[in-house]
Amino acid sequence: MATNKFFKSLLFALTIAVNVFSFCVQDSAAYPVFAQQNYSNPRAANGKLACANCHLNQKAIEIEAPQAVLPNSVFEVEIKVPYDTSKQQIGANGKKADLNVGGILILPKGFKLASKSQIPEEIKIKNKGVFISPYSTEFDNIFVVGPIAGKAHQELIFPVVAPDPEKNSDVKYLTYPFYAGGNRGRGQVYPTGEKSNVNVFGATQAGQITEITTSEKGESSVVIVNSNGTKTSQIVPAGLNLIVKSGDIVQIEQALNIDPNAGGFGQEESEIVLQNPTRIFGYLAFCFCALLTQILLVLKKKQFEKVQAAELNF
Image (cartoon, rainbow, N blue to C red; front, side, top):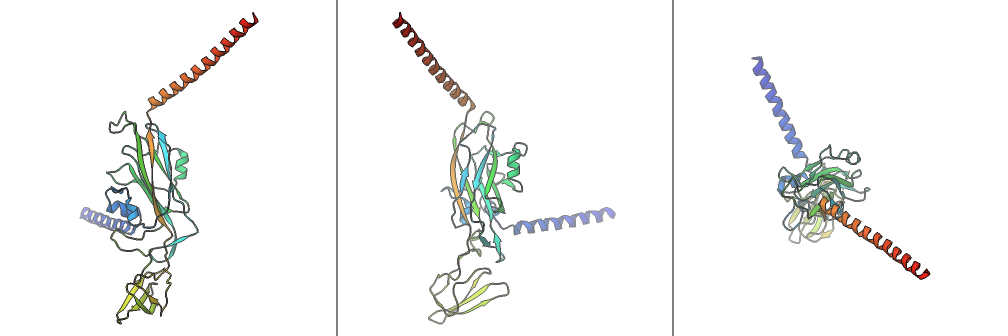
């Protein structure tokens, strides 16, 4: 009897835990979760990254990475996501909030995230409080990070370990392209196609604004009457600043509020060379031989000049 009660209590506790966890996951409505949930591969055939489907505004990013790496070496790929930290965005609740940042890094197959034991201490200090994870179990060469506080993390550092062609036959000593994306702020469109409140809302019909009311939630209701007397009521989300007033004449799609967007997404691509150590040693040997040849030529020339001088003196 006591055993049955124990198992029932355990089952009840597990049910509550699962429900709470599911609720938390649903509430984490932020990049790159949307991309991971809706796109098996974040990079389309035309090169466009999935993040750009929701973050419509474009803003530049920068990539810093070594031009060449050796097998099994650990190196940094840094994505810089600069923005004006004095600016704030409109949160989902309509209140002002600081911008978050996020990033995605698509490396060639075989390149992986370095393990904790492989990461140098200085990188650990830089990445304190930053969690980097693979995009999915299928793509362990694609990494995502965010959303995290933008003021403290405008440089996103990915510690990566290069593959070894001697151990992985699918990897060759070649020049590989890689792709990166970085975002600051919330997106304008949800994956469902629905607009977020980080948008300019246009009039759904032409006419005169006869009434503007504000609800307890802070939403604005704009009533527009056209020339035929048809009345429409349009809701502008809370936190947005209207640029129209009662009595104004508006055209269809005319903006009703100031553009609240303070962020944007950017993507870049670069190249990295997986260098063969044997080639490096061969190149060094060639340089050494060339240098030695030059030295011997100079010595031989000086010796020849001495012989000529001695013959002239004789």
